[in-house]
Image (cartoon, rainbow, N blue to C red):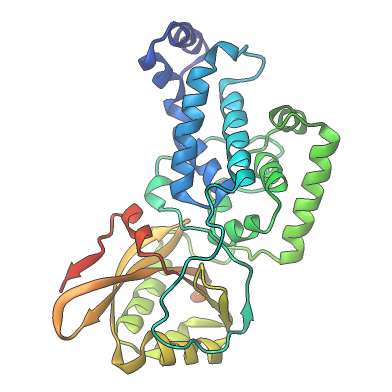
Length: 342
């Protein structure tokens, strides 16, 4: 819970005298929203946690420089945003080249080849404690909607500074003057960056989730359960029957993308479910959307091995996108193990 003004001033005085507990009291209510902010800018939950810690350390060390001309929240967002931009600028938090990924079979020719993406899924359990804070009057997006996978993919297509401006203005609703001060820029430059960012998102045709079932609703649960049963049984026709005609299958960080029932069906038959392979699907949630930890069954042993995370984008009662994250290391953030016993 964010403390009131009188308590803030008292805690500030104590924190400036070296009281670590007072500093924790000042900042605790902002931790989760700052982490989500860093995730939006960086696209990585792991990096977001690192940058959150860097932000809090920088704030602790620089508390004497906080003059109160802006709110404490705005000051913290300024530190977090600039730390994220510095991280993107120096490239230290992104591999220089796509990591080697061991392909078990030759993949079918894709519908298209995408640009490299280091986007990671964000566990819904971390969104559960996100403060229900009304965004500023300048906001265009609902805060939880602005962590959806489609929105995050679109953000990755923006230059870092444009990304930061769009998030600060259109997601969080900070005024142009506040954003200009955060970025040590001018309002004119902020308006220009925002126009370019909005134009890029409009050109990309970022999908809307207005037609998606409400999270956790009976309608969503039905689609997820039918999909899970079909996938676990290797029933490719049943899986395809749940997809929209223009559905996409993507597998970050692989650059290959498949669109449409024929292309996805061929991929499932030739790769995912070849030779009778079967999976156990463990439900979870990511980016406000249903997801599964995938575990490959082996008839020779009761041990099931992790096979990535599959995230579904729903449109009405159908699935418009399947995104499989191939890195098993991501499962830990969802409380999922590397192996299961059948």
